Length: 287
Image (cartoon, rainbow, N blue to C red):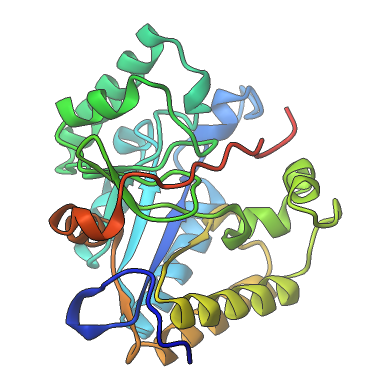
């Protein structure tokens, strides 16, 4: 193993890994006009069938996760969101209905944030962090987040950092299941030098396990991301479990932490992390 370490981590750990989830229910489909007008809301298969299996898996391996949920969901699935919190997981902000955040004008951005935070507070959720759909934000976002008491952003970027008092707790596109499983992310895969074809669960497993090993060697940070609505086959859930097993096997060397705790550590150690997260401006999907 290399003797160099990219960042210092708590408890003498060499690296840091977060397990995260994004998207809940019908929110994104409603925003894009894809949800049938005559179809009821409030019982989406990903919430009713898939999320419970994912939560059981996380319980089995004692992994605390961060779930970034759209604010629209708070009055639609309040019991589910509260249940996720009760089981020890963090709820983060993921726009109101999964709007691509960097494209919002000033008035829409403020309104989106205001109604989402209000919805969350009504069910006992206090957002600490925001993962913007599309991975990027506007030049107004960080100040708006501070006004709402948020401490971190989870953007598409290369490394953790502290920018204007907001911790950057980033994800990388190649470490999320949507990169592998969705036809609509073909342009993203091509831009990263990969195939435009959808990739298999086995390819996801092999690459994520390789990336986990690299991050532990480098002493860096890695956020893995699984979407409940993409766990459409038993094989995908099995592969998720095998990736989680591999994370657990690295616990002696890696701090397994929720995003809010990573953010607190970055904010306490600003000199170690710098102020440049290495923003990734890749287009995430075809329109």
